[in-house]
Image (tube, one colour):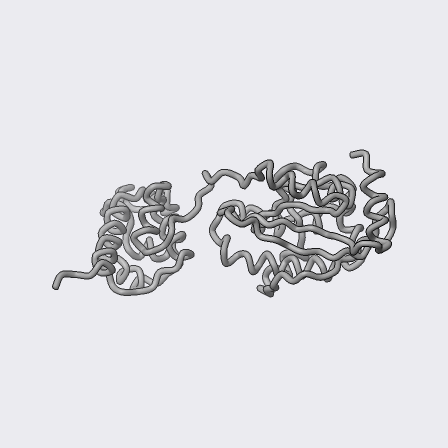
Amino acid sequence: MGPSKDELSRKELGDFLRSRRRKADPEKSGIQVSGSASGRRRIQGLRREEVAQLSGVSLTWYTWLEQGRNINVSRQVLNGIARALALDAPERDHLFRLAGEAPQTTSMDPAPTVGPDIQAFIDLLNPNPAYVITRCFDIVAWNRAEAALMDGVVAQVPERHRNVLWLMFNVPRARDLLPDWERDARWLVGLLRTESAHELGRPRFIEVVNDLKKSSPLFHEWWTSHDVEQFTSSVRRFQHPVVGPLSLNYVKFAVEGDTTGLSIVTHFAFPGSQEEKRLGDLAASWRG
């Protein structure tokens, strides 16, 4: 009986890694090559120990990988190896497929977009505030009621910062709307940490987290605690400068058929409540 499909894949993976290692440019991988007496390296490409060090794995483990042994390889390690070998996009995709993983999303991925049907749906929810978010909590669409509730903040910040957590940690007007800011913000950090299991290694996720860590010491502290949270429908309190206090229920729906992880979040009031009247007054008064 010949080798199994898994054995063939492991052998192909090892052969591919050796070929990329021998063709790798040490300087592109961050290896200093000017320190030798002759000014030249005696080998072509990278040494195994250099790839292992750059990838954050042991030399023994990486050697076994090149030898085609039956060992588990995580996406995080594959990302590290791809960076160490300075693989381009097709090479990176090939590496992931040989390792039995779906190709890693690259920075060339298009930004999530919302079709007219989704925009029309959240518009129908007026005067209940509603918006569409990604797994990184980027806000990619919102209705008139949401703009009124947030006092126009979302549209006024650069697109890169149209992110729920960025607004909460870095925009005082958004922060002042929430009497329970610390509880709400800490919970959202836990939700983002939970989403990291899906988004780890994706360029936009890395950008969001790095921006927040640099801009907010408190976010940095909470993020490094690695606390995780699960979304549950609940009540959020607002203190709005126009209509005063609001206690609104909020729910979240996944956009079925979307492959980028979009969700719709809406705040709503029960029929006949004071909150329902205040939301109607707020939407009617909004001139943004």
